[in-house]
Image (cartoon, rainbow, N blue to C red; front, side, top):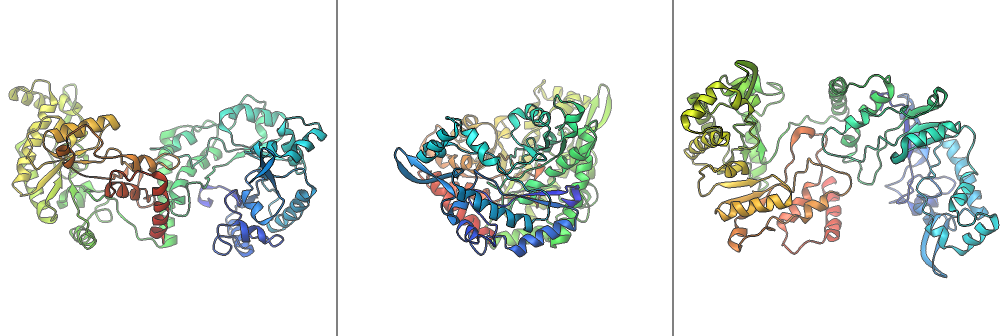
Length: 602
């Protein structure tokens, strides 16, 4: 926070599931309301340490004790605090929000907040007041009677207001968090003369795939129809990270550097809006934070990769000098590779490397001249390069030497040759390629050129006595394959990948499925349930075809992933692939996975 100039820590310290704040006045609140009365509480010493740690970094600590809702944990330690819910004429055995009609409620609150005001030195405290469910109040006959006596009728917002009014002052700060009517709410609050904090656009727990920080950066807090005086009442903004699906194992990657985008937005002038400029700054700042984090916790820097491990070319001129991010600190040395293979072998894990061509090879061209296709703009070279050039004999000489080495380094009987996502635009622009296409009788069908290259590569790999895996595009393009080729299906929606599985297996090839298990594609909530429901054999085919499905693969691609944000979602795919077809109960799986996650964390 200090590195990002965030100067207020809004600490939502208690909520429905748990009351971890250890009160000296009411110790029974945490004794009965916390997840655990000793290991999962904030002691007075903890709170004091956090406040002082923040103060030394110029950060205020504003606690939130949210009432009358979000108080289920409070009722476990304080009898008669919550409203008794009814089912018809009888108590249901459940409880609702704080009971606002009894004087004991306010006696309790007076003592509790007196303590809180002495523990937390900040001049402000957050009182919550959000998401109050009126159903329990409506069911309770005593509340109904009291409502009638007060002349509130059936308007339970008046009952909530009666309770809240006990705490409000003219200098109240209003926290705007509901996004559906953000501009309207900002206008109404400031028109009423209240200062306000905005958090609606910056809920960092609502994750999505890709660079979702950009939408945070594009928000302008003052873009509502208000006077200059109203604009001045907007005193700041807040990036929120709620804990439903966040704990210590994924807190850091959810927060940073996404919160950095919010910080820059809030500290920047209104006309600072260039996303590209912001990106370059945030990339550098992320590196500073990672370096500090590693220094602070003495974490050994890890390198990116997968098992199957999607590698880069190994000759020294490719990796050591030109093609790696850094020729010394960001390479896999022969010793590294040997260690990884042995470490995996000792745990019963095979290591299958992938050297993906003819696309995904831009880094290869930095260390191997004339390997990639020269792209043209009109009749002149554009200065850029495309996929591997499949028309040169030197290409195949190079591949023969490289895969000869790879076959010696990696003992597994298979190597993954890729073959996916080949962009034909550079090939189409190159006059030498065009001439070659005509000579081969390929016309304008560049899938035939790709197939020409792949077939030659397969012949080369066959001489190394290796089997090979390829992405489904190679099969789709009609390349002649060995009978034991393994086709890797990765594209499309459920119907599309099921159709592909049927086509591949009907041609007699074994197949591996990864389409439904791309773990880098994140979304808010328990997205693991979709992984669990995917059945790799759920396609139209014979029993013989189903037997050709030899497994599945959970993929984690590195565009937005490194050592700071790997997560336990992989376990779901593992259980799915090792389980019988009729093991499908998500609730049963949830209980197992929660326990297993705890084992891994421990």
